[in-house]
Length: 113
Image 1 (cartoon, rainbow, N blue to C red):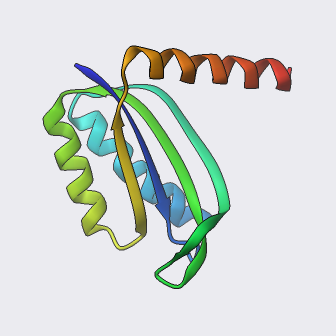
Image 2: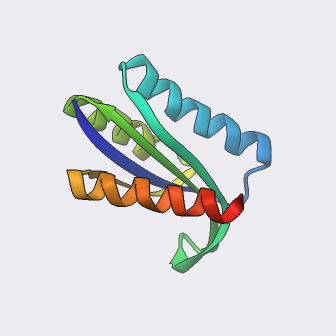
């Protein structure tokens, strides 16, 4: 099992319920494939660096999970088919990436406390 990080952007015209439904759909795809979630984050509505499909904002979400390689292909195929997703990126995490991500989360948690 490898560790992966997926960030995806949903179109800004969705309601809050529709965003939750889309996120739940991708979560269920991973859970059905026996992926183990390490971390999930909803970054909310953010401005894009450049317009995509004539949109300047989008709902950002991050999944960090452990899964087999073939699961990524299934997840990305579903994201391509779903018109609510305007961009996505999946990265295989090495040990340094995992350490850095955990360190950043710990810093953020301490700052909020």
